[in-house]
Image (cartoon, rainbow, N blue to C red; front, side, top):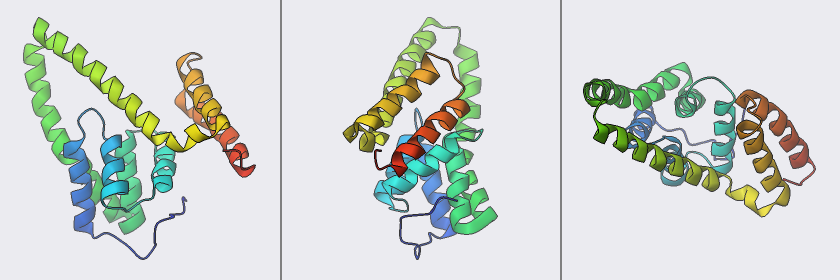
Amino acid sequence: MIESSAPTAFVPSRRALFLAFLQIGVSAFGGALPWGRRILVEDREWLSERDFTEIVTVCQAVPGPNMVNLAVFIGTRYHGIVGALIAFAGIVGVPLTILLLLNEVYHAFAHLPQVKSGMTGMAAAATAYLLFMSLKMGGPFWKRPLGIVLCAASASLAFFAHWHMALVLLVCGAVGVVLSKRGQL
């Protein structure tokens, strides 16, 4: 289990847990990770920067959407199974309802050239947003040459070598553990 570097005395209420993940869920256009980080680390200060990065790493190593996994992880940390269910409901409830409605609208108009062009533009913006978040989360590594090499190696193995994400995490994660223990990362 990941040890928290945040004060252990603080435990958000179940209501606060639900509302935080509801806020993430309804704010997260193009991806929830940046909003999750902002709300959990910067605004509410429930997690340190390091805690967030470590938990996201664990959440990426298991099947399922990262932020849903993160909601379950955080909910369980603070309120056990009930907390996991509360955080899950908060993060997926409203977005699921919106998605079901948009699905109907999209399928009714997907054939229109304007809709196709709009989707292409949104895909470009979403890609840029993911790149921004990756650079922001990788901030601590940009100060260490081996951190940059490990990030580049991970991206290269996934993109160019087409390695499965689980294998990238296993191999590069093991290298990261060794480098970290040596004080080089």
